[in-house]
Amino acid sequence: MKQIIHRIAAITATLCIALFFISTIIVELFGSNESIATIKSIIVWPGLFILVPAIAITGASGFALAKSRSGKLIKSKMLRMPFIAMNGLLILLPSAIFLDHLAASGNFDTRFYLVQGIELIAGLINLVLMGMNMRDGLKLSGKIHARL
Ligand code: HEM
Image 1 (cartoon, rainbow, N blue to C red):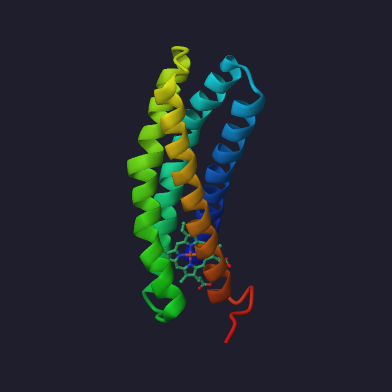
Image 2: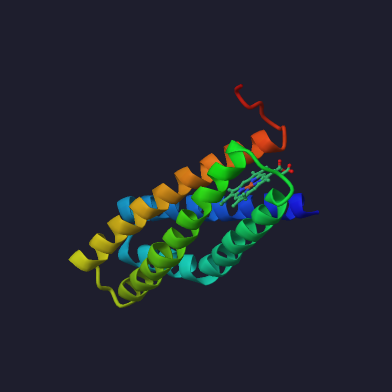
C-alpha cells in the first residue's frame, strides 16, 4: 500500500513539474500575453494544489518505506528530498504566485522574465533530482537493475 501511494505521488509530482516547465516554455515562445496569463493561472490553481500535496506525500511515504531498509540508494534519495522540497516551497511556489499576479495584470516587464528565468532553473533542478530519485526508487523496487 505504502509503495503504491509513493509511486502515484512521485509520478504525479514529477509530471506536474515537467508539465509546468514544458507548457511555460511553449507558451512563452509561441503564445500571446493572454495565453501566458492563462497558463500562469492554471499553474497556481489547480497546479500548485496538486503539486504541493504530491511532493509532501512522496516524501512522507518515501521515508516510511525507507524505515525498514538501509543502503547507498536510500541515503542518496533521503539527501535529495530536502532540496526538492525546499526548492519547491521557497522558489517554485512563490515564483508561480508572483508570475501569475504579474501576468494577470499584463505586466510582462524585466521582473517577470527575471523571476521566470529563476523559476525555470529551479524547475529543471527539481526535475533532475526527482528523475534521480525515480531511477534509484526503481532500482530499490527491483524494476530496473542496479549496477554492481
Ligand atoms: C520526489 C522524490 C521521489 C521520487 C520522484 C521517488 C520515486 C520513486 C519511484 C518511482 C519508486 C519506484 C516505485 C515502484 O516501483 O513502485 C520509488 C521507490 C522507493 N522510494 Fe522513492 N521517490 C522519491 C522520494 C523518496 C524518499 C525521500 C525516500 C526515502 C528515503 C524514498 C524511498 C523509496 C523506497 C524505499 C522505494 C522502494 C520501495 C519498494 O519497492 O519497497 N523515495 N521511489
